[in-house]
Structures are given as structure tokens and as C-alpha cells.
Image (cartoon, rainbow, N blue to C red; front, side, top):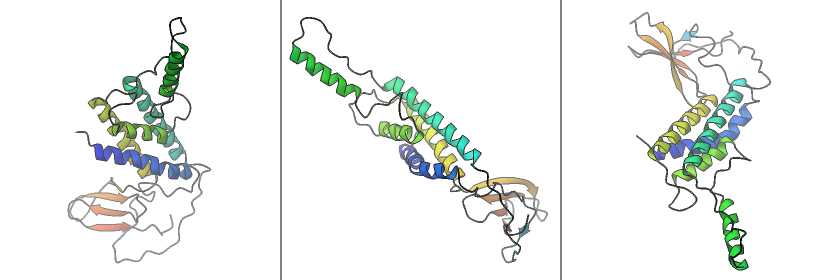
Length: 225
């Protein structure tokens, strides 16, 4: 089912978080996910962890972030291209250069044609074609009032925008360590046999939870690797 509010929110997040993602290309990595140490160092909440942080050598750029930005841009720009091709009408033509058109009428028609072609609501197939620009244009199309150089969006367009927007926003939040994730460790709890799940990735301390008995451990991120 199409969710207009969620789709608008996702597009807004893409626009707002894109500068942070661009900064993250050259930033020090925030850590692997799942934690590189696996679950070899588990401690109960009341246990003290000691040791010192391991040495982390950052790459010159974050390849994962760079690749993600490229893929997100390609997907959003391609979607804007396809929706514009389906819904955006061609610009009005200029007055024909034939006899029978009074000069004043020809000038007026040409002015209207130029204004129609330059309408800022139009999607451009050349020039600035970034993920934020595509997200902004798609957001405007969702809230467009009747009129303008467009036909109404079809239901399939709405679903396409929602999928692309939510996928892009989720990926950006994950890369920026905003979204908290839960991943299976592939191990079981010796006490009850439940699966051990590791949660984290949002900047808070990661933790291990047993999905059967609910017991929790935290990962000792201060211990030397």
C-alpha cells in the first residue's frame, strides 16, 4: 500500500542527510558491522571491561560510502528520468515562421513557449543530476497541484517512488550509523538453545540478545583485538 507520509519523509531524509554522506566519504570509518570481534568477548552488564582500543587505520576514502552514493544517485536520477518521460509533456512550440502570423502574436507565442520550456518544475535531462535534485523533484511531484507541465502520477509511479525513496534513505541511515540493525550471529545460547542476535550500528554500544530467554550481553568494545 502506498504511504504518502512515509515516502515524503524518506525523500526529505535523502536530501537532508546527503551532505553528511558526502562528508563521510573521507571520514574515519565508524566501525565494522557486525562488530569485527564477533561475539568472542561477551560480558554481562555488571562486568567491567578493561583494555585499550585497537589501532584503526582509515582508508583514504570510504569505498563503501562512495559506491553507495553512486548507486543511490543512479537509481533516483533514472527514476526521475522515467517518470518525467511518462508524465512530463513536451514544451510548447514556438510560432511557425510562416506568413499569416502578426508580429505581435508571434512574439507572444514565442514568449509563452520560452517560459514553458524554462518552467522550474520540469525535470532536466542534462545539467545538475544529483540524488538530492532527483529526490527534491520527486517530492514536488508527490505534492503537485493540478496544472503544470505534467500528467497526474499513476499508482505504479507512486509505488516506484516509495520503494526507491525508502531504500535510499535506509541505506544512507545505515552508512551514517543512524539506523540500528539486528543480525544473527550464527551461534546459540548454551543455556537455553536460543539464537544469539547482535544489535547495534547506530552509534550506541552493540549488544547480544538471546531470542529465546531474553538474556542480554554487551560487546566489550574496549578490549584489545
